[in-house]
Length: 251
Image (cartoon, rainbow, N blue to C red; front, side, top):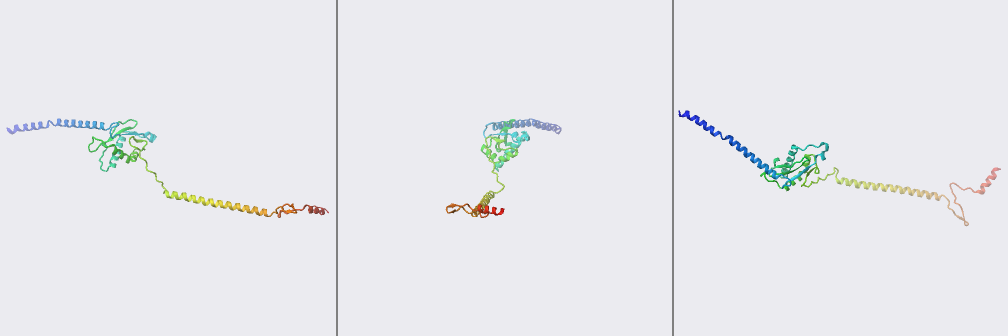
């Protein structure tokens, strides 16, 4: 009889111990919601315009890509947060920055927003702006390439644009200098040759003219009377004898 009465009592005791379980789960849910709300409020205080260690970003996708422009949506925001986290982790090899540590706020339709990077160890404080700026500057090209943009179309307003690395010519500089010097030397040699040829032609022309003048008899004086120059090649006809020849010929 005692055993018969003890079994129902034990079963009723077990039911009594299990009954508070729904109340315990409800309490955990409330605590979780409270924690999430506190974190959301803290994040809202951390990420706001002109907040400490916050940076504003302005993106001009239409200007950069024209007809190939893409829409800025939640996926692009995720990619931006991932690239900032990547920059922070690459800047410091010991960094444990996660995507969740990058907060965005005040996103506008013209694609401008603010962002901060929270400390991964505390998650309630932000990383100093100097570290974020250094990480962004070191990885600026990687971030630009991820969105097919440039420093002019992806602007970090508080971070100065990085200078693009100088473009190295495919041909070594010394070869270019050597080619220029060689061209100058060749041009000088050609100039000397051409000028020498011209001088030689001019000299030959002058000598030829001098020889032609020497073949003519210069005007001389005979008894004080000037005589005409005699051309040895063409000869000269004496008018007195020419008249006699005509007279005898007619006979």
